[in-house]
Each structure stands twice: as C-alpha cells, then as structure tokens.
Length: 142
Image 1 (cartoon, rainbow, N blue to C red):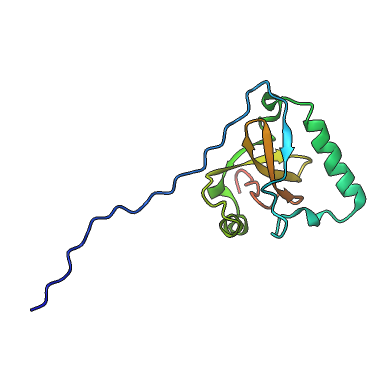
Image 2 (tube, rainbow, N blue to C red):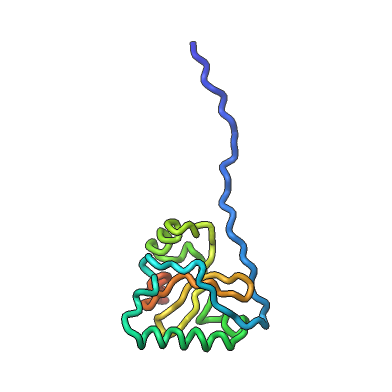
C-alpha cells in the first residue's frame, strides 16, 4: 500500500497592487513617458494627422497649468481596471502592469482620453484612447 504525499498548506501568494504616490492637491502636474505603450491597441500612433498631434499636445500643455485638485473630478478620474474592456486588461498583462488595480482617465474631449498612473506630481502616460474604448461609458437605463 503506497502512502500519498502529505499536502502542504502553502498559501497562494496574493496579488499586491503597486502603490504610487498621489500628488499633493496643490501640485501642478508634469508628464512622464517611461511607461507609454508604443505597440498596443491604445498607442499614440492612432493619431492620424499632424493637426491631431498638435491638438493633443496643446491639451496636455494646458493641463500643466492646473493643480491635481483641479483635474480630478467628474470628467477625469480613477477607474477600476476591472471595469476596463477585455482588450485593455489583456494588454496590461502583456506589458506587465497587471498588478495595478486602478488607472487614471484624463479627459481631453468628449470621447478622447489619455490613460495613465500618478507618481507624485508626475502623470505617467500609458495610453491614448480617441474612442473612449478602454472603459466605455455605460448608459443609464439600458
């Protein structure tokens, strides 16, 4: 009669989210491109014209004059990664950022967003989303 090996109750490691420092409410923001996704479905190559690029850069430059407390609100806000579309969640896994629980949506126009993370007063730019596809709005009563 063979003995079964004893089972060890080794705990499964839990996901520990990356904690990044939020800016002070009075900090003016700056940009960082060190995590920008240059190959995925939400990369900046989706900008099809020089005018589109100029418009994007102008909007980002205007945000630099604002404080964090003036940016965060109804239109620009944190969203749960769980509420992102499957393609976005899969892409976070591919680029080894699947340890984050939230991503910041910075509104540029009605549909257009730039997504990223905060690290102090630096906004780490990750994605460009001209069609509001990363986290589509859910219409009420539908």
